[in-house]
Amino acid sequence: MRKLRRSIKSLAACVCAIFLLVAVQARTPRQKEGNKNGGTAAGGRGRKSEARGSVHSVTIPVTLNRRGGNAPREEMQLLELVVQEDGEAQEILSARGADRAPLAFAVLIQDDVQSPVSNEIKGLATFIRALPAGSRVLVGYLRAGSPQLTQRFTNDLEHAAKTLRIPIGAAAAAPFNPYTELADVLKRFESLPTGRRAVLLISDGVDVSRGLDNSTPGQSVDLQRAINEAQRRSVAVYSIYAPTNLTAGGNFILAGNGQGSLKRLSDETGGRSFFQGANAPVSFDPFLRELSGLLNRQFALTYLSTHPSKEFHRIKLQTAQTEVELAYPSGYARK
Image 1: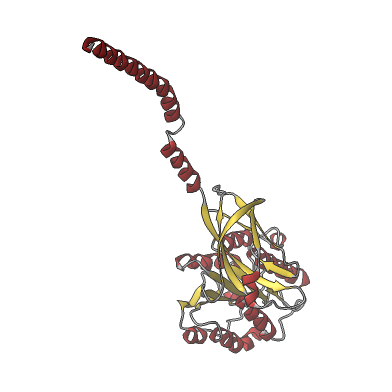
Image 2: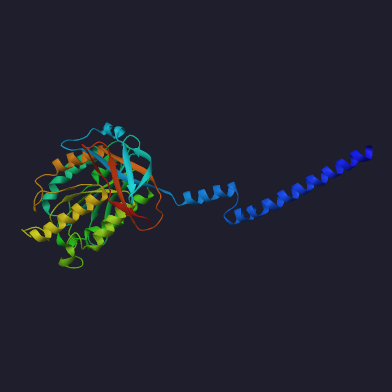
């Protein structure tokens, strides 16, 4: 009887060993196949991380306005925004207004603008002093050679306002073109924290560095480069047209090219351009009041982009509120 029991136990052990061997052989091909495709579940998570590794955050300046009137800044909280990049919806991470994203602001004046601009220096200084506490301000002049910065970025608004000076106003002070030096200054935003960024450019907007035929908004190579730099660094460029000796005196073609170039620069970076005919504005005050309101309603919108290529990526914002207008850059190209 005992021998029979031992025989039965031995037989059962053999059967278990056979089943175990078959199971191991059956699983081995699947494991090898899994290794070829990136492994098991842990390997799958690794592939997902690699996919998310191509995702990067993008911050753009957005300004809120209501058709037929100014939208209150608080309305930003009620927006239901949809961000599309190259036609695909993207995930929004944050929308930071003036209370959460201090403004970095550069005032740039072309040094050969005509003398009427000299009367606007006091108003510009008052505008700088009235910027929200915590704002960083840079003051510079676009002139022959390279930009002259009278004040690098500082949060001392009073000191920045005092560094404004009367433009030279002579043709000898003219820059190669305003856009090469604007692009140089835009690079200085790189060292600042990501947030709300803007430039006020006071210029005739004309680029004749490659001839009169290339002074149109669609032909200026350096205008396009400046737009690219502003979009890449999330800077909205606001502009005020001010004539120089080149564009004054009834030269409507050059004045039109300059104003068209400034408008394109502002439109494609999320800013706004200001001008009154082909002559110097009677006063900058109305422009500065409107600019102050626009900056108060500007916010920094950050989203996740799923497009890793270095080509140009087109941006489109949508909201269900039909009475609301949104100003934002037309797109950007990755570095």
